[in-house]
Structure formats: structure tokens, C-alpha cells
Amino acid sequence: MQPVNNRRPLLIVGAGGFGREVLSYIEDDNPIFRIKGFLDSRINALDATPRNAPIIDSPLNYAPAPDDVFLAALGDPQQRFKYTAVLRDTHRADFATVVHPRANINRHARMGIGCIITPHVGISVDVHIGDFTHIQEYTVIGHDAKIGNWCQINSHCTIAGGARIGDFVTIHPNCVITSRAVIGDGVTVGPGSVVIGKIPSNITVLGNPARRFNFR
Image (cartoon, rainbow, N blue to C red; front, top):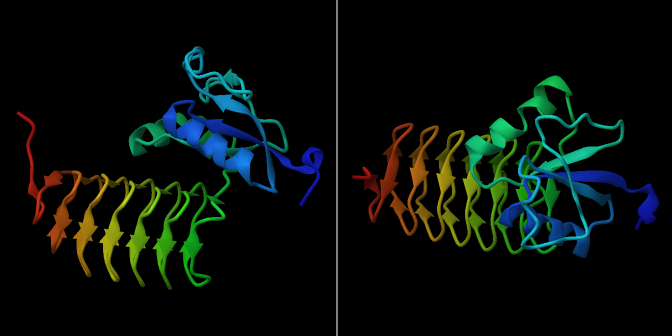
């Protein structure tokens, strides 16, 4: 394990609940990074839940130091995209992918930059996960599944082998995505849903089997 002073300084984008969870993962067991602080536009975001890591600046204003590395811990994919835009596109900042040591990731799985894989996730052989995708506790992903960029896969989901999930997809807890199901870009899958077949882009689905759902 590297001495603390030799670890790269890590800034967590987002000081909400997920950001605080990620902070605890890094503090508990990470030999690569040391926490530098949070980036959040809400300067008082930690007032009710103080931490040793301060809020340093807004992610839209912060100018990275040469050795800084970042994690985007925002649960909403659109917010994740918005609040990392300046860091990504203007500063060309370095975003880490972090896999918790209690996750079980097959050595033949692949994932992009900016991903967060939390405890007790299982990812099987030849799974492909795109950039800036988060996968939460106790989710299992079967062989040959493909998950796009900027997705949020929440806890206790099962994604069967060969499933295809597009970009900017949110899957709420306790969902089942069946083998060879296809989910288009920008889809929201409501909690407890079972997805069978093909779901077109930019809609919300709910139920078993999952069908289009409109809020009224």
C-alpha cells in the first residue's frame, strides 16, 4: 500500500447521499487515493452531516491541480453529465473508475472511465460497461451484457446475460432485465419492474412485464 502522501488527491463531485457513501468506501479501503474534498454548488450541503472532507468549490468553477483525480458521485445521470461538463470538456480532467474490493468482477469484464462499482456487485464474463456508469449494491450482471454510458443501475437488480442497455438509462431497485432484452437511450425503469423484449428510447416503464408509464 502506498503511503498516504503518495496517493493521488481525489475530489468527489456531489456531496449528497451517494457522495457521502463513496467517501466512506474510499476512506475504508483504497490504496490509491486520498480524499481532497467535495465539489458541490451547494456550499452548505454538509452542514447537517459534517465530514472531515470539506466542500472546496462548485464543480463548474473549480480549476484542477495537476495531480487531481475526480469521481462523479451524482445518482441522476443527467445531473452527473451537467456537473462534470466543465471538468471534462474544458479542463480535460482525469476521472477515476473505482471498484469496491467486495465487488466480484470477472477479469474478462470491461468498463470505461468514471465508473463506480459498489460492494457486493457481481459482474460476469465479457460484460461491457461504458463511461460514467454507476452500479449499486447487490446487483448482478450476466455474461455478455452491454451497458452504455452515463447509466445508473440501482441496488438488487438482475441484468441477465446478453441484455443491452443504452446511454443515460436509470434502473431503479429490484428490477429484472431479462436475457436479450434491449433498453433504449434515456429510459427510466421503475422499481420492481421486469423488462422483456425491446423498450424504445426516452420513456418510463413500470411493472411486470414493464410497460410505458405516464405520470398524471
